[in-house]
Amino acid sequence: MSELLETTLRGTGAEVVLGHTRRFCLIGERINPTGRRIFQEQLRAGDLSAIERDVLAQVEGGADVLDVNMGVPMTDEPELLAKAITLVQQLTDKPICIDSSVVEALEAGLSVYQGRALVNSITAEDDRMALILPLVKKYDAAIIALPNDAEEIPMEADRRLELVQHIVDVATTEYGIAKQDIVIDPLAMPIGADTQVVNTTLETMRRIREVHGLNMTCGASNVSFGMPDRHTLGAAFLPMAMTAGLTSAIMDTRTPQIVTAVKAADLLLGHDDWGGAWIAAHRKKQASAAG
Image (cartoon, rainbow, N blue to C red; front, side):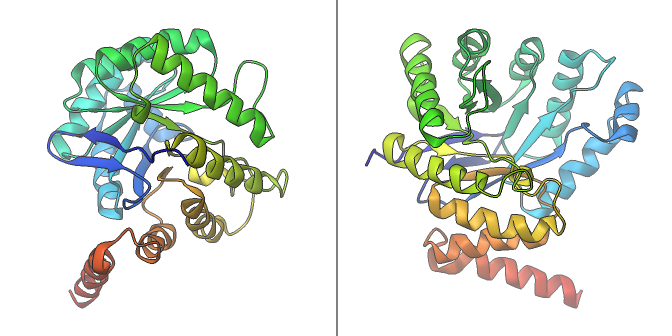
């Protein structure tokens, strides 16, 4: 069993540590224009007001970290991402996951960021690592890495573990990234396409924890894509994944059913000392209902 590693992120005030014995880290995904036509039109017009609403809603729902993506066609993404990150940091002291496939946008976002960011993401492709890992090192960030390459999204755990090993070897030896700053996305695939994909993902998680001790994250909603009653599937999947080694997830924290399932799993797995967070959340709900 490998040493279990911890990944430290910081915002302007709050520090969040991902770890296998710590409370699960909720990364709020909502600050993202993908599939949101009106939000895209607002951003093209320079209107960032929806970002303010999304930040407040994600934080209120329980987000520990906020994923910020500004991938809008026909905009200057580097400029827009830098503006969005600056705005988000004025609204909350929580850490940010800077999410872009455009290297120039990542650098623009990292250059204005105050704290220690998480960068989303790289794959196991050497040319992709060569573009992004120097930025991660320069700005002392952590990185999400996906074990797929130009040829494939592997459907077998063995191949995913091979690619994780490649990412770790390249990142640590060629770019000087600390191993604990590599967060692996073990590839959560839609259950509707193949009912065995979640078993493969869970096996991948268990083996990554055992072999590398790395922290892990995933897009929690990927699993239920295309299926009915998605929130129930999400509320079942995340506690199962937590027992296999998942330590964070990128998700919409406006879904109480899923957030509550995660908090319950934290308590039952011994990650919530004396049930303090569970009891505090219950009292907050009671006070809100009474108010």
